[in-house]
Length: 181
Image (cartoon, rainbow, N blue to C red):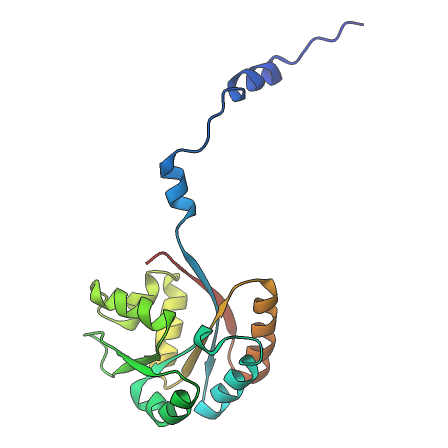
């Protein structure tokens, strides 16, 4: 019995034998920075602070950010400063209340979105998140909740953060990526 080679396989071999490395355009896509965060809302500063204290055993303090109304976070400012985290005001022209975030990557990214024209916190978050998630987080802030963001670097970080945030938050916990600028 004579074996006849499959013409499609032969054609694929012929076409792929001259493969070249990816073009520079392709490498720009893969070099886009992606920052992953576990995110949870807390009803009170005491609940958020307990979670932050628990998380500080496995996470660097700079990888944990708090986002909320300035009037909600200001009373916590003394504790935040004790943890080497200072509050930064975020200027969104169409938000009726002042919003703050602890200094760090989240505050930097949100400030940049405001600088580029985001008129609300929701609009800034919608640059990275689907509209429903951006709306939920902005609504939680306006409902006087404290949003805790924990930067994740690997799967172990994600599991630790999820365990801690789920144990202490009375709301859902999600993972969100801030991609690019």
